Length: 151
Image 1 (cartoon, rainbow, N blue to C red):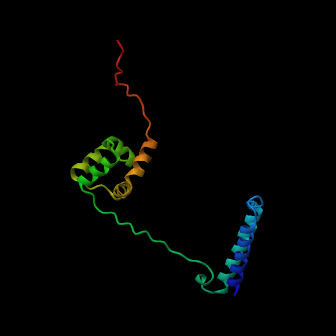
Image 2: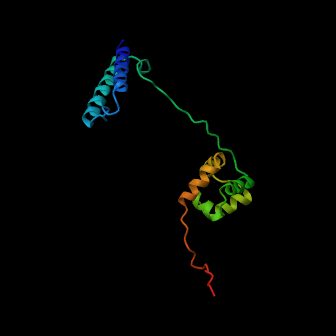
Image 3: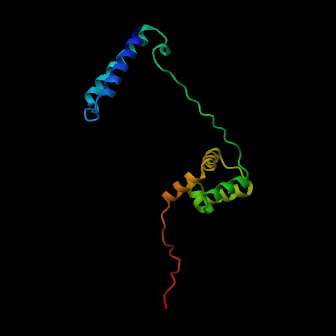
């Protein structure tokens, strides 16, 4: 009964807000948000004190991600790096591992779970990760690079 009246109240407030012109819509003040939060916490506390099951009056959700990270072969590691079109050194920096780790993975495999998870993401949407990688890249002149001189 109490939950029904709260739902009706929420629907009425939403309907009133939707019928306002865009000029009249204003963000609630901090005081309004604070008052609304305190009122809702009081109602929640009263519900808990009543001993009624919480799920009868409130939406309760549990979200579980179905993520299964499989083992990576040396070929898969190299293919993943090739998807980004980067060197071992840049790939290592991107994954926050040493260059020797990437070299080892490309010879014998066996990256750890976090690296495998990241490589799964790269393989899932390589274009996104190429763009992301390029957005982080900073081009610097190498001190050993020789610039051709005009003669």
